Amino acid sequence: MTLPHTAAPVPAYGSAALADVLPAVAAGLGLTETDGVPATGLRLPAADRVCVFLIDGLGWELLRSHPDEAPFLTSLLPSSLAGSGRPLTAGFPATTATSLASFGTGRPPGEHGLAGYLVRIPGERRLMNQLRWQPHVTPRSWQPYPTVFRRTHAHGVATCQVSSPTFEFTPLTEVALSGGEFLGRLTGEERMDLAAERLAAADRSLVYTYYSELDGMGHRHGAASDAWRGQLMAVDRLAQRLAEQLPPRSALYITADHGMVDVPTDPAAGARIDMDAPEQEDLRAGMLLLGGEGRARHLYAQPGAESDLLAAWRERLGDRFWIASRDEAIEAGWFGPVVEDRVRGRIGDVVAVAASDAAITATRREPGESSMVGMHGSLLDSELLVPLLEVRRG
Image (cartoon, helix red, strand yellow):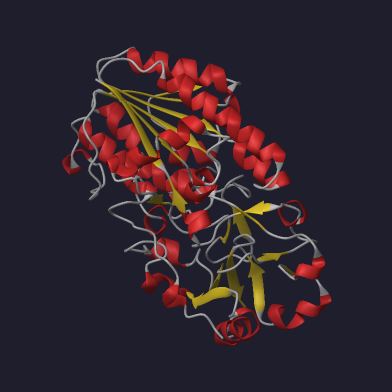
């Protein structure tokens, strides 16, 4: 049975997506659409001081299934999404570069343009890695919208990012998270302490802090591993450490960029389709470039081969993947209600999204990514849903 692409879940852009968080926070700090902040239907209680702690890879379903490892975060589940006890959605694909750009700009991928992990540079026969920004393109031409952090800083809110020093001068930080002051700290404990200190340093403040190690552990060992569970315990302690230092008139929001699933590595499971293997010749026919990532692929066709490529992929993999043409994916709303012309060419002629525990790998072209145990990117709840936990101090 071929899965209809229209049956895939669609992110809740405009009301309960990751892109809505900072516009809602900015509204609580007194900014409006006339100040350049994107509109949102998400409503959060106002606070003079707001900290957002983004934990890379902390999916809603993963958190709910590990109460023993994360007792503090679990205790906050009823507070999620303004006390509704429900999750946010990330955008599509549910991957770090796309999600951070959505979070920081307050816009869906169809507007900010970071539409995947590897995407085609329109008009060229090469791919761009939007996480590592390779090959280099001018950041502000690739993503022209100012971040919400820039907007809040310009309107007198003391704004800063507290993160690893590694990220201070990266193009992704420039286009997605810049605005105000960047403060680099190496350890999670240092970041939590400094975030709380900066939150209290002004009457109106917005502080962002970030932790990537949970995601890295999941990629290397899988979310079912002892190593991942140990990292979750460390994250739980960091979140509690930050919450206990909140100054008066403040709110802390704890969220994530995506969840994660473990894709079986045993060849007998048949979960990994290696595009570099000889037996996948029919899937490669008519393909110019293989973009995206294992669970959210952008396929770029040779001129004139778009329909044949779509048909071949649906015939072979349509029972395990939602497979759509570019126009179908856009019409379905996967990338948001609007896809700008400059972004269309970055989206694959064919988009293949995992609807099971399968992944499309490329062991020769992408050896590192292909070796990962934990993966993400799909529209399944395990990857798409993320928390928006809340702690307030009056």
